[in-house]
Each structure stands twice: as structure tokens, then as C-alpha cells.
Length: 365
Figure 1 (tube, rainbow, N blue to C red):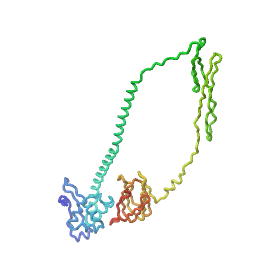
Figure 2 (cartoon, rainbow, N blue to C red):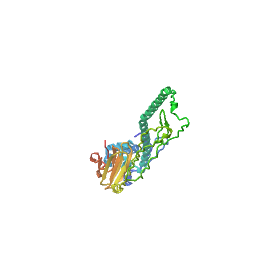
Figure 3 (spheres, rainbow, N blue to C red):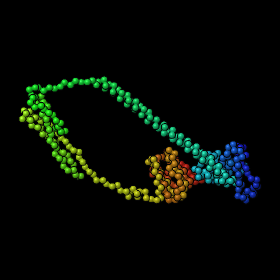
Figure 4 (cartoon, one colour):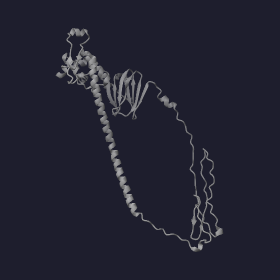
């Protein structure tokens, strides 16, 4: 441990017997120089262990944890430990074993843990922002290219189409003077939509169309269609004009059908999730992770995007069913009390159980 940390720790002058009767040696952590770096819980524990001439293996055997956990605590690498709850419990046990003030060491851990979590959250935010930016780049480039191509095509169309738009002179068709009726000027009036104007070289007539027959009344069980309508041609024989035959206009209406609506049974949906012991958690994805608990155990589940889906303590008889996107990162506090399956396939948890009965594993790779 660096000398600057040793100077900041004061130990009361008591003998070993008094410390044993008092239940442990109390240590007051005092920062004498405000400009100095505050001690860390790992440095305090390491300094006291070395002062008592204890090895890492002695601490590991006493606390029933691996030497890897002891090194992680003393080096303040709390991300190597299984969650904040377990880490704080290890530090309390370590401080109690060395005879240190448990509350003082825990306060040091809370301070450095909050700082590390803030740094980790900031790093995660930057990483997610960079991923979103990289994901949107192809769409930005495609939008720019589409705009350029569309503008170029519109300009080319207007340029070449405008060059061909020259005014055209349409010659007027004049009827022979012998076939026109000079005494009566012909006044043309608009005809209905179903009539047609017939013009010939020798005659001019106005053709009107009769009104279509009224459509039958609409019912819910019948199809409706109108009948062909044949326009009536006005007779202009009195004026010496022969009427032409106009083809019939066939108009049909769309077939209307009304289907009965069957209500969706709601009871089946409610009964599917009526079991109180099943905790269903839904997230983005189609993979189903199912964990059965035969005893009380802590559980944490993160999805493939490192987002925390679930974190809590479950009791015996509970069933945790998570729908999300595999792979899942899982931490179990008491792994022997759990069984697990992914998409109906059983997963062997026993190979990942540690000496403290916890287990951390990733499924669905």
C-alpha cells in the first residue's frame, strides 16, 4: 500500500487481549491533508491485512470466497464482483475479520462505487449515442443521394419537355353550306353525362340521354348492380336531320357485402396469465427465458444490449418468465435453488456455480 494512505489511517493503541475482548479493533479513518487523495476501501483493507501479516489465502479461507475476489476488493475492481449487494457484504465481512470499523469502510465503498457507476453510465451513454449515429449514417447518405437524383430528373424533364412544347394550329372543319339550316340557328346546350353529341358533315343534332332507372333498395344480404342504360336519341325528322345510333353505356355499381363481426374471446387471454407465481416480463425480442426457484435467490438479467431487464429476490415456488432478445447475461445469488430453460431447452447451471453458491452465466449465444 502507498505510504500516503498509511499516514491517513490512525489505529488506537490497545493490546491484542483488549481488542479480542472488545470484539475487534476499531479503526478511525482520518484525512489529515485535504489536498491528499481520499483512501479507498481496498487500500484500507489491504494495509490492515499486511499489518496483521495475513496472506490473501488466509482471508479467502476465512470469508469462504476465492482469492480472485480478495484481489478484486483490494484493487477496487468492484466490476469483477457479482453486484453491489454482494460486494458490500464481502467488504463488511472483510472489515469485520480484520477488526476495522465496518461503517467507515462501507462509507468509503459507497463513495467510490457511486463515482464508478457514474463513469460507467456516462461511458454507456456515449457508446449508445455513437451506435445510433453510426446506424443513421446510411439513411442520411441515401436521403441526400435521392434528393440529388430527384432534383436532377425534374430539371432534365422540364428542360427537354419545354423545348418540345410548341403551339400547334388545328384547322377548323367547315360543313357544306347546302346541308345547314339557314332559317334556324342551331343552339347547342350541355347534355347529361351519359349522352353524346353526334356531328356529321350534313347534319347537326343534339342527343339527350334518358334518366337511368332507379337502383333497387340496398340490403345487407344482396349484391346490387345497375342495368345497362340505352340513351334515347332525339328525333329531328321534322327538320330533315337523321339521327345516328349511339352505343349503350353500361354502368354497374360496386357489389356491397356486409360480414358479421365475431368478438374476440377475452377470457382465454386472461386465463393465460392468471397464475400468481409466474412473473412475466416483456421486452424487445422473441426469446423466452424461464427460471424456476426452489428456494430464495437473488436474480439479475440483462439482455443483448446490456440493458437490465429484471433485478429482484424471488422466493421458493416462483417462476420468472422473460421475453427478450438473447443472449441473456444472468446473475444468480443462490444458483443451487434454480433451474433454467431458454426457448424450451434446459440449461445446466451447476457448471457455473461458484464457491459462494452464486453463478454468473450468459445463455443464448
